[in-house]
Image 1 (cartoon, one colour):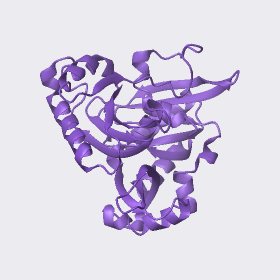
Image 2 (image 1 turned 60 degrees about the horizontal axis):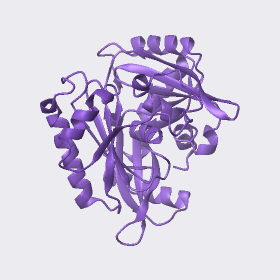
Image 3 (image 1 turned 120 degrees about the vertical axis):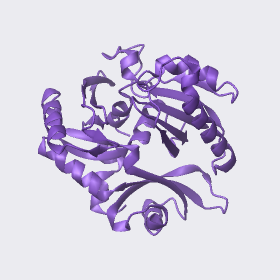
Image 4 (image 1 turned 45 degrees about the horizontal axis):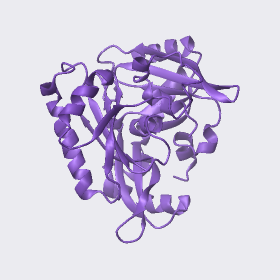
Length: 322
């Protein structure tokens, strides 16, 4: 964690005060948001999206580098992007928890480095990682950390592609963390389940104290089921129930899940049907306000509609300084 490469890929917050856009590269689209200050408050200065044809990127893996490079070059030119904070797809990252002996960043990082190969099927030299301390003590009295790991080669290759088209990454961040920053107030008490609906898949994340504690992805999305029909929610509700039960019985964090936060494409259409489908669990279900950690919409009306903003959650979180 203390290496220069680490800080290039996952820099500390003080390096992120420079103006940068949040760049979300998904399998189906490119999306960006950049904020600027106007009269003391943040406003949206740039935003946009471009579709990615099916098959060019699959599970975060670029299948046609030239075609994706051409799309990125056009996207960079169209929205005048330079410095960007970039999403890392969940499929290209690993998440695990471990006890650490100290809150000191360097001591904790060194301790985690010794445990990387026990938890991730890569050589330690092939990984970069970031960690957050969980809002609880472990059972043996030590602190516990949630560790995100990314293959070094994936990040370096993405950096190379972006630099070739004129964009310069200031940081990379795993997708669930970027979405959580937009969806949940910093250090909010309790735990929340985030359900991120994408066209062909859905991510389920548990966040406690602002820290990503659990992630899961299922092959169920807004384009491969009929919205609004409870029977079509079977795969999703089954996974929600499984994750809820797992958290309730295995979590070291003393926080029950307070509710479900929906985000992503078509999530407004699924809100009521999902609420009915999980009524037996007793969790409230709400679609998030993507902007509530950025600006007050009573004083500033963003140029993106509520429905459209739900597709920008990751980019919105990435564009934030912290």
